[in-house]
Image (tube, rainbow, N blue to C red; front, top):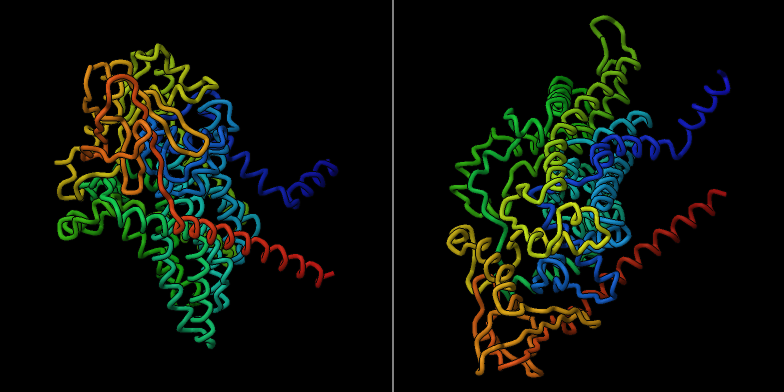
Length: 600
């Protein structure tokens, strides 16, 4: 018995114990997918699957193109990854390339997101003096919490962004404690977020602003902080120039279709409605938020400035994410909010990170927190049991939300007649004489991409300026389906698309008429898209509201080559990005080596 106790103590004290705990929690969370050998097909699944499939095929075939979607999104040549987390798109593409099928990929990528979230939160807690055991518990709560688990259960990419948010706050909270900016920590944290999810980075930065102001007011070395702030900003811009530089170039020269305007923002907030309590913030998570808020209010004078600042930011963003704000009125006065923010629930990622961090800080410093204080029984065991109870109830809610998606895809595997559980999605399984089971389980990942298509029009080029006022008059979803997806099957023989080694795409078809005829080709054109038809550079005779081109095709075989002109400016952008990351990595390695040597 003594040997067993010593062995358990050794495991508990080992450096790998947090990984063991987080790995087991991840397996429990994903057990529904693993045991049913299925995936969840939800609101954004097909959009992100197409993004990652494109980069996976680029890696597989060596046909790299940072801009054009030559494999995903029906090979329309549209731009998505360059505007939406380019670095994470290639990382996920690599994981997809190494995965046997889509089921394995979804399980692997979900485990990856949860482990990143757990370790990021664990590290954030440890930096802020949270005791090791509590830091592990908080990391486990965060990885299975609603903000991160939104990726697992519904494939909303804000969940993926939430996994990386704690990395940014490691540097920010260090700054708040030391009143000195950790240049590398904040720069790399923000750069990782921007390379993953732009909106999450903007929300995280807005939450950091009050902490920056407090630090600047309290520090005795104001000019040094201002200087370090400028250096941090420049370094962050250099590490992310491939994101914002490309965005500026594309948005400047094109009309792009934005995300759909959410005209009912008040229904996508933290509230006591069933949907919110199951997916946005669960009852036990709300109790943690309210408990920490109560703790801050009742002990305000006894708390230090670090706790007060973090707590104030957490409470502010919590209110911002709820229906306590008149979102219906706000969207009427500021209609841009319907496309820029879309869902106020996105602000809740900040309360999840900061309230969970504060809970860890409370448990580490206040022996009477979460205990039976009225009974004079400040037991640590009771606290652990209570936290386990919180985790168990959270997981039960997670299982309930996942079971809906699992049952839908299990039904799809059993019958080709099953209804697609996704809006604006169309099935072409019968056309290709395949089943949903083959789509999910086959080693050939092209099946799913070809057979189930969602007509998400985000970032498609348009011949008119599209905004929240005229979005529904343009009909982006319908026109995308009719002009860029369905149209491929309308012409006799269809369009054949081949990706070339230089990253361009060649489209061939036959004009069965005896004279030159106009053909709407299922590919889109941006300002920098180059079209070469039958060996000659051409301009389309028409570009539709979703960017579909029409060209004059000669009788017989026609060959259209589609490429994206990058130019010297883009080469400089990519060079600066690569050199900046290499410089930071080398600096960190050299610094750690010097520190290790000096400590010997």
